[in-house]
Length: 277
Image 1 (cartoon, rainbow, N blue to C red):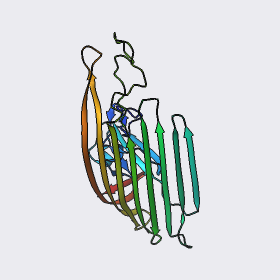
Image 2: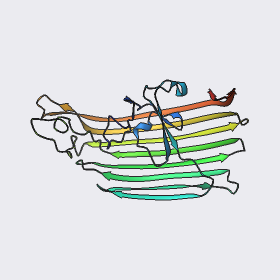
Image 3: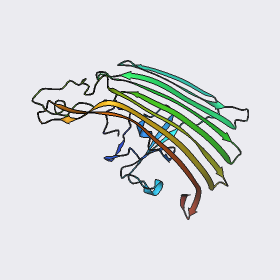
Image 4: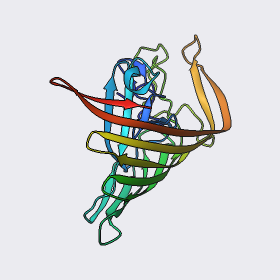
């Protein structure tokens, strides 16, 4: 589940078994601590969830589990898709998904995902925009060797929604109820920008049907700009809200390289698939 944050927050703070998995999200099996800072884009094929301690597979991690986002890969047959949607609160979005071969032998394939959207809310002064472009190129060098190059740029712009205090919404407050549409920030001081650029490769070579070597590299460049007024909580009189100003520009760069060999073994009637770095 997504918890600890408002559904109108650009962050994806996932809870598994009551524990935050903010830093436990993988992208194609590679640790990426910035992936939770920008919303899941249209280039995601599926979401895999491993509940419980995952140290036997991915090393040190949280007790709740891990989330793995798997991106869409190039297709050998031409594929073209265009999507648009319109909703309440001036919600508009569009996406394209293009894929196919770049040569007659179909050894070089591409895929391009791009999307853009904007939406408002019943909350006062709220408007958010999200953008994504994600190209992927794969080259089948031989029957046993394949190289995939993948990049993406995602951006989310708009205010944070901090919600309203519990006393006066779900709990009683002697001063009355707080309107559900109330924004506790400032309309002219609530701007954020979450942007992430990622690029990497995935190299695979099969020695035979049972043994395979892989080298995976991924660079993630994340930047957060935030200039807003944030609430801290109600005072004892249950009518005065303490607030503070946040103004910062934050960069987080990550570089991940994973080299390993995968082998399929059989012990009697039991089949194993092992990974060795």
